[in-house]
Image (cartoon, rainbow, N blue to C red; front, side, top):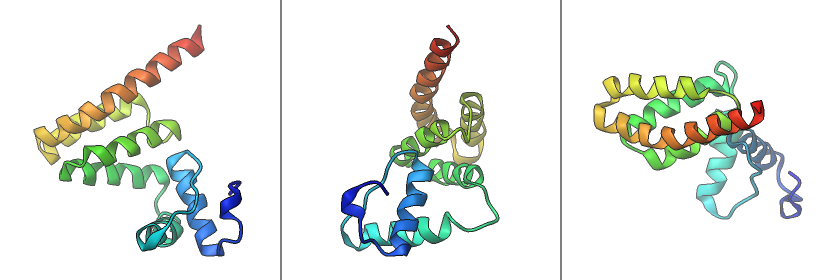
Length: 132
């Protein structure tokens, strides 16, 4: 936690924020209210920190659940984090879309595809630039 406003955090909050930063791939700062506290302390500090599943495993499960619920706005965050953290490749994400179309319903899978497409295009463009 390099953010000065995060000084003096409880160890539980500091751990939760560190896990959020790791999971999302960008620096997280402390936030107000009970909702943020439960998200940081419990969801990330305890649940995402448990042994037994990798971050990639958790991301795959989360993408499946979000797709099944039609939550493409939240899936957008997860897709960006998965690519940015190297948990899933562009090809894997495209395969996930096709797979979930059959198990989460074609409309929900298509919503995920509409989220994945721009992320994949940016990743492939960046890879081409890096090669040249």
